[in-house]
Length: 216
Image: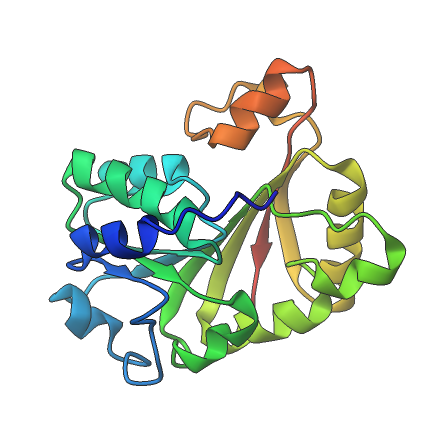
């Protein structure tokens, strides 16, 4: 869902210049391979693709202060909401980027990322749009370029059609899959961090699908 553009955010986003890369000052190839230097420490790097309003990344970053986190989102109005949550929690281990995921290999060096998270991405349900799904094989090839050997992709969705499609894509790409669940909340996983969409969908009785993908 695309939010109505709020012009005032283009100025307000600069209140978070210490950890946000906005539309008018985006991440570029200058940052590629240098994210540990940007964070000021040598730590594993985890990236959330489609960070939304920041519920997930802010909670996970608070839980894992020893890890550096980057949240990527295409909409500046949405990243503004995430930035406010990061500031409220005073999380020095989070950076937020307004960026197009299709160009992710332009800003991360090979093997620079330890983990990827995709939570409740757009399912693009029409068949003609399947190449836009973030779990399509072309995207998986991009992820393979930036992940460390043995890196993980953690994937959650309420859309069973997208989940089944994704499992097929993972298999076609020769990737290992574990921790597959078709009803995550029924399992009562104490480590699960809910996103804003997850709470919304589960409240409507939707089952949450989850898996972990292992890259070679």
